[in-house]
Image (cartoon, rainbow, N blue to C red; front, side, top):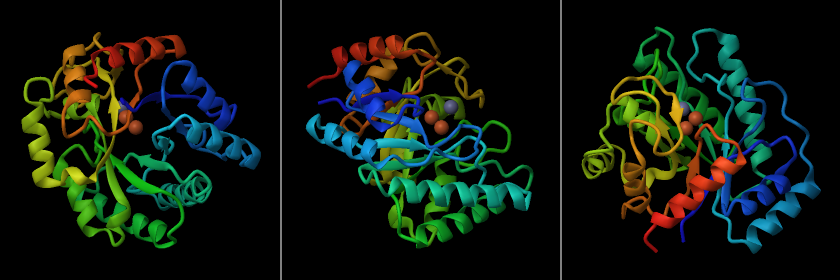
Amino acid sequence: MLKIGCHLSASKGYLHMGEEALSIDANTFQFFTRNPRGGKAKDLDFEDIAAFRKLAEENNFAPILAHAPYTLNPCGKDDRVRAFAFEVMADDMRRLAHTPDSYYNFHPGSHVGQGIDRGIELICELLDVILKENIGPMVLLETMSGKGSEVGSRFEELKAIIDRAEHSDRIGVCLDTCHVHDAGYDIVNDLDGVLAEFDRIVGLDRLKTIHVNDSKNPFGSHKDRHEKLGDGTLGFEAIAQVINHPALRDLPFYLETPNELDGYANEIRSLRSVYRE
Ligand code: FE
Ligand code: FE
Ligand code: ZN
C-alpha cells in the first residue's frame, strides 16, 4: 500500500487535515507547525487531536510530517536568530509530543558565510539541547538544494551532523527529490547509484520520509523551485521510479508541488496508478 500525502494548511486543525487527506485518497499529510515565516503557534486543541488520532488509526495513516518554519535557522550568525530557532523548535517538540506518530522535518539552515563546519557545529549545539529533553518525535534533516549558504545539500554534511550530535538515535533524514536533483544527485538517470551513495555515506536506515516534487530548474542548478509532477526537469517517469524503488517504496511520500487540493488529488491518483502493489 502506497503511503502518500501532500502538504496541507493547518489553519483548521488536525481533524480537518485528516479529513482533507482522506478526501483525496491520501493516508498521511505534511503541515507547517506555525506560519512558515515563524511566529506564535495556535493553542493546541486536545479534542481536535483526539478526534484526529482516532481517524488516523481507523484509516491506517502513515506518520504525519510536521515541517518547521522556513525562518528557523539553527546556524544563523546572529544570536537572536539562533535563539528564535531554539524557542520555536523546543515549542514544536512539546506540541508534537501529542501526536506521537509523527516526524519533525527542518532545514538544517544557512551558515551565512561562517562556513559549513561552523554551521554544522551550531546545528549540533541546538540539536543537543533540544533532544536532551526527550520530548517529541524523531527530527529529520531535509536534504537541501545548496542555494546560498545552505547546509545539507551534500550527504556528507548530513552525516557530519548525525555523527557530531549527541542524541543521533533521534535524528533521521527526509529526502526531497527536487532538492537532491538541484543539488547535483542524478536521480533521473542513476537512482540506484545515488541511493547506493546515500547508503554508503549516511545509511539508508536513516532515511524516514520522501518529499516528492518535480523541479523547475536544471540538474545541479542549486535553485529549489518545485514543479508539478511531470512538468519539470525530473519528469513523471523518474518520480514513478522513486516511489517503486525497493529501498524507498515502503516509506511515506509527501507532495510539495505547486497545487491546490484538486491538483494534489490528481497527482496522488497518478502515483497510485503506477505504484506496483
Ligand atoms: Fe522543506
Ligand atoms: Fe521539501
Ligand atoms: Zn524546496
